[in-house]
View 1 (cartoon, rainbow, N blue to C red):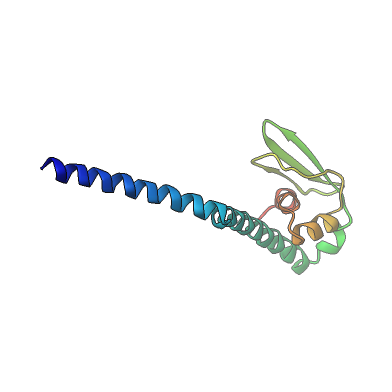
View 2 (cartoon, rainbow, N blue to C red; view 1 turned 90 degrees about the horizontal axis):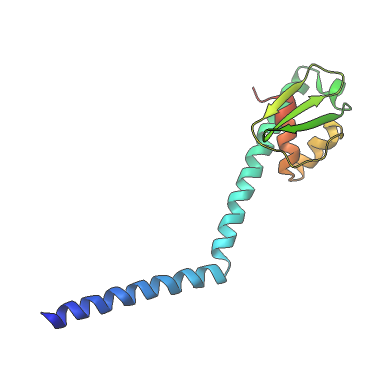
Length: 131
């Protein structure tokens, strides 16, 4: 009976050792970091989709050409970002700090968003809102 429980204990330890080695192997071969990177890319794609939807709506209502040359001012307070589009009623608040430079035109911000800048997409969503 003692031999059987010792053998079971040995197999349990060997199994844990194999799991640790498999995790290290996966991490060192870039599988886990690649998975994390893919998750971040999905987040940017969702932000791009939301921003593009907003711009398409503005274009459909013939408003984009009027506001695309306007600059956006960003202010952060209490971990939230307020976005104001110059000389327009467009303003909004984003629930977190947006890491992006203030003072760029909406057209430039949109181009950077489509180029993969998550911060630019967040500014579009903050300033123009997602309906």
